Amino acid sequence: MATTIGEVISRIRGQVKAEVQDAFVTDRYVYSLVSKYAQLFMRRQDAVNKLMKFNAVWKTLPYVELIEVDKVEAECTGIQSGCTIKRTKEKLPEMIQGYWGPLIRTVSSIDGSIEVKATQPGTYTSITKTTTFKYNSRKYWWFINGYIYIPDVEWDAIKVEGVFDDDISDWLCGNDNKCIARYDQEINIPEALFAEIEMEVVKAMMMTVQVPVEDGDNKVNVNR
Image (cartoon, rainbow, N blue to C red; front, side):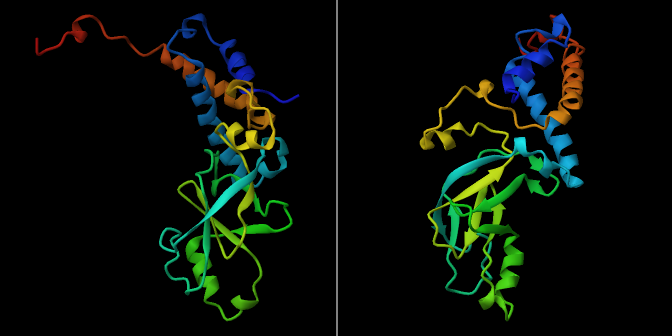
């Protein structure tokens, strides 16, 4: 059974001393620490190409709307005229950052029949200038500031598979999926990394109670 965000937070709270169960140590703060160390350890896994096998952490946005944009925004001013570039209408939800950038495993047509290859705008510009480009039927995408850009497609939308560090329920509700509270949602972290992540989070939480509190004299406004 999938582990939820709330269950991980509760498990971590059960491991810390009573003095850390303070009002300022909110669930949001605990989850921010979980996210921080998850990024660190998942980046390490991605660097050695071990993350792809953890299928449970990859989630799909089945319908991400596209709009047409100009070449300047897409950082492709060197592309010859006649090229149409589309971009996701909205910024994608926040994603876990891997070794090579945001963790996106697949970008494809809605039905999944055409998979789009990841590249960079400069690389794509160079590809378009090759003599064999007119025979190249492959589609390409790149990522800039939270948006996916895709040149030369007539699609209204794409399907995106990634590891999201943000609530994606709003992206799914339109497809008759029941929206649930954030902390009841499945956490997108490989279970094999839970122990290591939780250990680091507990250490960080314990450090918060070792910070000295200002005494009364230090709180006096010197301008009074």
